[in-house]
Length: 379
Figure 1 (cartoon, one colour):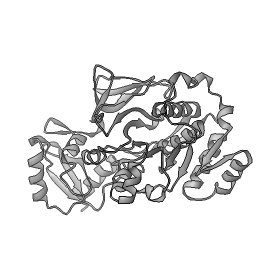
Figure 2 (cartoon, helix red, strand yellow):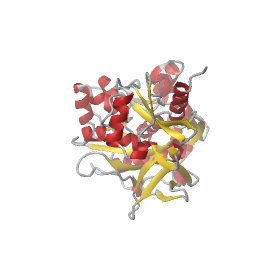
Figure 3 (cartoon, rainbow, N blue to C red):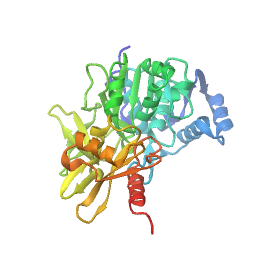
Figure 4 (spheres, helix red, strand yellow):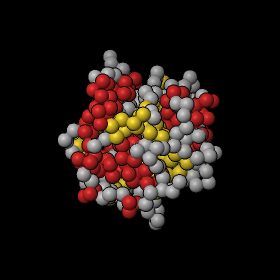
């Protein structure tokens, strides 16, 4: 099926809020509109779970307000509330459907929490493009509950990883026509496991402020790459600090300067090295936490992350939080074998779990607090 042409997408100025509020939603194969949709919202509005969350979002979308509330993921601090414009959300949804060639009647999996923009945008894509929304409770392996073929599924890397561990879920994952991974880094081991998938697997560059992704990169097949290609109408450049600056007027009113340290190729693609917030200054040498994690990704069993604790001599001491059963001596030897000298952690802290955000990313601020608590226990 051919992709919709970008010129066929209504401009932001043409979007009509009245039209956006006139909803028809196909949910798990049943068409809901008019009285049926109102009855669905009324009967589920006060319930818990994904259908309750969905009904409340639909009520927000139908309201006279030009915006809907969302919250940031909280990967670098506490989640923050913000308002997203419905017209721009619809623009983002149409752009994604056009890029992927999604057509009315195609199935789309909703398996992400609806308090975040990623989950909300799955619903908006279904509304504006007439997709069949397949809703399941968000969990680590949502495909266990889905027996029908999927044309589109947006998952976190953690959900994809867990799905691959179950043979039935892994086969269902392989059969998704467009698998979109977002909300966290696609590790080298996960990319390797997805490399031979027969259908398209994408990694997204996204944030709440841009109403889901503004760039994609292919994870599988011979087209696999570390470089993100901006969506049509999106341009990028670097700030004076080397961080990515995004100009995407259809989804974000202002030019957005991020904290992501990036490289930009001559053809306009870009790749991310890590966040400015996650640079560890140890003895005058700046080390990017994500780059250390990438080097260790396939060597340390269990979950882990790189953070730091204060040090009188070095300023910051690179610290490895981990859930493995390895000893400090074993971890030190492994790190020295894999990492450049000045990247080797000086502290190893075993924890029960690595703090995560609701979308499965490492909660960096919480990880740092945990490291401080463990390294400098009270008393």
